[in-house]
Length: 293
Image (tube, rainbow, N blue to C red; front, side, top):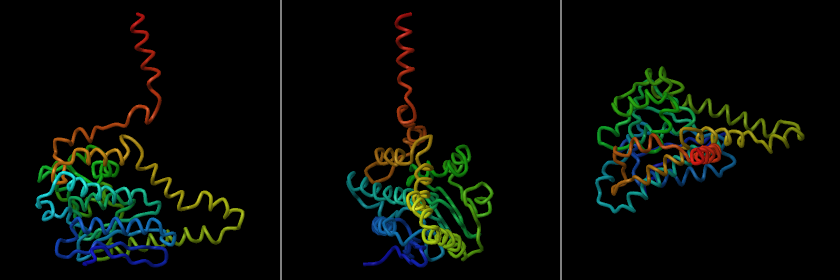
């Protein structure tokens, strides 16, 4: 069986590499399942304190595997594929450890979504980003309709999603789509250097502090702090990321994709009022006054 995902670990840093040269690292069902399983292992590994996600053969990810989408399959099979992809997004955003995407070449479609699920994006100066969903009348998946506006703002995100134009590395840095730009071929090295330093600082905090302070640090924990920060970021308005993913799965069509007709419904969704505050008391008071008046 081919190995589509490679993991290399050293000094508390894990480099996760998508490796399918034939499809430019497209997200086939087999690759998705393998990636999800390996992310589960890394999340439970206390020796892993930071991750770098990248792609082999000069490209990050070309998006979904079109050949797999063309195959006939039932509605449950299509939704199962979508849920596996959503499982990966939840693993990355809920990892509890910093995740950096190192992008060389193209990050297209679902590959674009996968890169933006990370906490930080380091792009080579040859990198290109494109949300190609509109060209085939599909809804952006893997949380892109949540992560993209968080990075570049709602108005600019709408233009990128609807136009499906290619964004080069220099423009991506200018608009905030990526955090750093590295020379071609050096994205993984630059991302690994920053992550390795972060992992080393976590280790120093755990082992070099005095016992009294260490007890407090162990209770709060640098990794727990990172986990709590990341959970807070993915649970804020306009709607929590898990809520968006659930809606995409609900509107999934027979072949595991989501039509554009659901764009507005998902983009405008808000959690119940009780999710943020108790607004029912005020509404009931207004209704009572209107009846008595």
